[in-house]
Image (cartoon, rainbow, N blue to C red):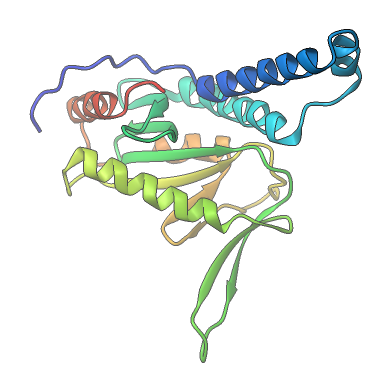
Length: 223
């Protein structure tokens, strides 16, 4: 790999989700006060934020909590990047981890319920793998995770580096024993278990990790 010069500070986990939540709150306040000049303040005080607005704050908390866990694990053999922008897209990568066993593209989620892998179809019909959290069908998150991992592979342009996709559920109802699983090459787990996974030994040296970290920081700037 050719050397890359880039800003390699970890970034701030959840920062873009926080900004989007604040933007939506400000827009709602301006809209309500303009429509109801005298009662706007009261209406805002007694009404809840729309669920679509709350979701951004909920997501930010999940990213922040996972970010703190990853930062506690970081060192010469574990380097992290938080809240990275995807060029020519409004989407972002929640967390990137470069460690001895490769690169982990981590999507943080703060959903309630127990994650589980359901397989439909089989002998006479096409097999369909589904990710459910409680009764909620979250299979689209698997598709998104695979696409994010492909973006990182493209940025690295190095087939010798393993790139792993991870869905990390921060507050899900995980069992006392076991619980994590892999669905279509996407690992589904929780923060403490993820910290264990990224701390495992692997083929990459400290110098290689630093080079990959710089390359990814250049390819995916702070969101």
